[in-house]
Length: 306
Image (cartoon, rainbow, N blue to C red; front, side, top):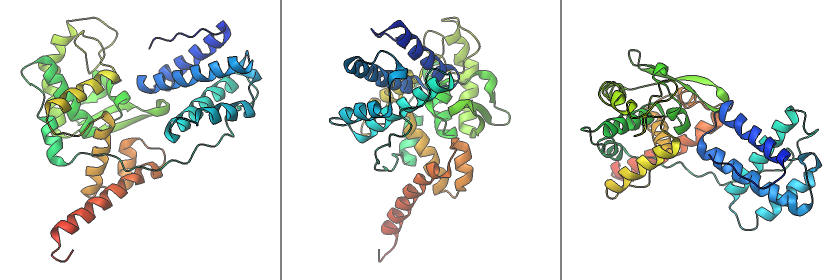
């Protein structure tokens, strides 16, 4: 991610250190890094207008003023992310001894409407999994990528961060590095295992010849280097266009689909929580609403007196 801002060298340096911390230690996705960097750029511009030249001059009122101005023409979800970005950034500065207190800590997040997660029905999953052209190295890669995302429910950043050494195809599992650099094992179904084995045997060596890089990333781009999360989104967009009539699909849609299908078929909520890498059970419980909708739909369609 290219990072340029026209502020003081000290401010630049601190923001760069923080972005490096997010990328390396917290393993935040490129998508989130871009958003957080943009949020901090906006706050730095606000500081300049308010005559603040360093972060230790920022107080609680300053953060609230900034949020109030941002809230005029932005969605609640965007404002909540900006507050989270500032909280995280100032907490980083506080731990480093660069500010005494976190001025964003007491700023309340706006109450968000909890939307039900989008997911695919089985027939749509089958269409998507059958879309890649298995006669080409990139098609074999895409097939393995899609199968792994649906089989494991991993986040896109966790997926592109995988190395070949993280896979154990005999056991049918992969070691992923989630939020906060937390490790967990996820399971792979037989179809994902088959797709990965074919990709590693027939396509990975071909793609790797196109470029050089450190380590052995599992998913490679056409240049032979590690696939990015943006590229995964572009791959999905390509197949959505190719499959006429299919709804918009993001990597997170496949994560939602993974959880929804498990719960629809009787999986225990706490097992799904662990597979998803959720710290709190409440983060997983949103999928029970989805399954309730599914049950009501099936009941309405099947019961003679519904």
